[in-house]
Length: 201
Image (cartoon, rainbow, N blue to C red; front, side, top):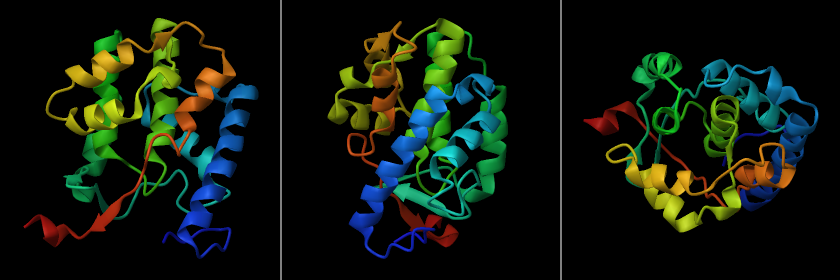
């Protein structure tokens, strides 16, 4: 159970309120043109996205995580290497589709925040795609099961996630409904376990 500004003590209630508030904030990011002021592909842009989405819910909004986290059997970048990982991601090229997805995969492995990584990073990805290719992902065309399997396997083999997202690209870059599907937490499951550094031994 995450500490939150809403004073909610029930996990399901928190999840419902988190989705409601973050979706509203995501709409604002889109409608107010805030996304257009961010530098595509930079971690600083992801920080601002995450902070805007979750600042009314969590104290850690826009701040690096201070714990190691895992999803199932997959452990994200260890805390001790997180800063170096993010610096590397910032420097990665993003001139074509393959490079952009490779950057997205690396950011997913880094998972810099305690909660809300998937939602924030999908917006971040679309911002890069829009800026560099004049396309975005139509997330309604991405099968949830296929996506979760592909993103899980992407650190070893990224061809699946590339194929999946390439087939879902659209030129409807200013369509609100296309954009908002990426923030749908009920569609893209997020749930992390905390583990200690000594668990790696």
